[in-house]
Image (cartoon, rainbow, N blue to C red):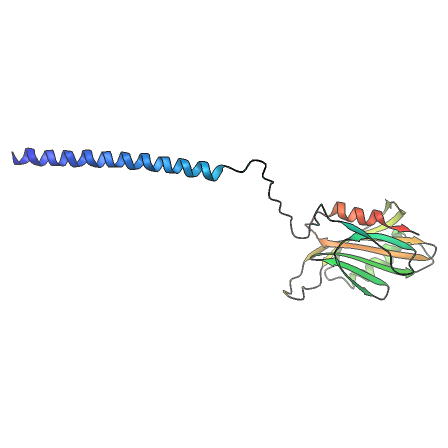
Length: 206
């Protein structure tokens, strides 16, 4: 009789354990399903999050015309960028990007050959880790200009000391003894083809 009573108790315990387990499983399954539905849903009409790589100029960047005092040219530059000037050179900067405008008086128009033989060696001695120079003629609204593309290291950040590998585009515009060198630069991995085209195409003589 004692053995029968013991088996009965064990049997009842097993039934209780199975019942409790099923109950907990059902409860957990329902909770998990609810969490999954809540976490996976998104508000109707929500805009996707955008993330621009370092150096990418936003698509909605506005531009303003810049004309140095007494100059016979104008060019559009990104609105809101910091501006500094020294001698015949004006620079606009924002974060990792830079627009540099330099003027010089010269009777000779720049050519692919003159830029290759004179400008490239000069920059090689000025730009840290200067590399991959490519000189060509391109067409912009102002006419045919000489374009020099190259790479180099940026100046160290004044706060962090970090150096960025930059891509440069230098356009040499010339008319009646006046040359304007427009240099656009930013990180090599940034996609600034369209913004740089806006700036270089906006250049015009007056």
